Length: 350
Image (tube, rainbow, N blue to C red; front, top):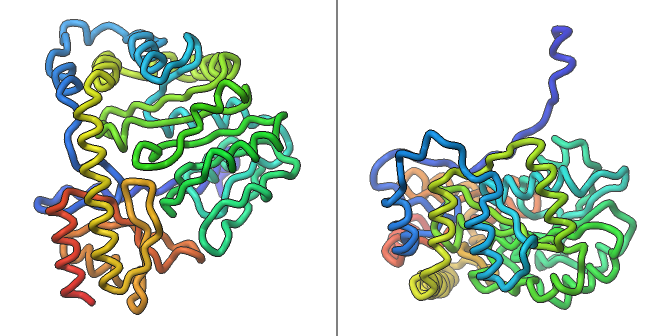
């Protein structure tokens, strides 16, 4: 090893889902929404004032922040935004987990959590999910430096009730509890009603799933004014202009067309339940999903084999090699037509 290599921070990076560029691919591997964003969001993008692109955007993204505070019924100072929820979560790890005690998150959850912990040199422990892939609140009642819960959880697709999260909050008044609600719009129970009672609760959400704007990179955090100000202070010390001008406008406009937003959600939910039944009829065990994806394993065929065979036929799903979940596939809910092709392809393979 060269001398200068000793000072390079060594980490195992997060590996995102593949982004195939070929034509006629059915992409069910990164939990994107198959339907377009709302009309108002599209109009906002198409009417961007390009003469102002030479100017820096508003560092506070006040238009978008104000729109989010109004939409969710929060007070001024209770929301901040970032370049996707990954950005917001990464900043949250850096801001709030600054002790020598281990933070806690499940052994099967969003695989970016251990990456951030390693990057920022945060000690961590991973309480195991139970045999049904459920989070046990009692596992989070020991000394710790903070807690992160994806609710609904990924990749398992299962959600927790607010009473269970509140049980964790009540047992941990002296640390920050982050609830990652990336998928909550698809049937999970939001912890928003708890914000007024727990000043140590931070909720993180994204526009990438339910709002069909993964390409715009919009994430946001909701919490007490003290937590949000702390996040803003760290963000301003790293990247003082996190969102572009057009992103701020599009994110604000997306909140103005609730009817189309709810219509798209219902389409995803309807297709999800149809696909779940179809997979079960073909020998799959499918967990009850509160997300826009299904977590499923076949009774006879290995997850790795199905993943490879589907990929060979132009259908991309996600496969993880973790010991407890290697037989499962995470399948994004696409359009009805895409899911029908998935089912028909499975009929050829099984």
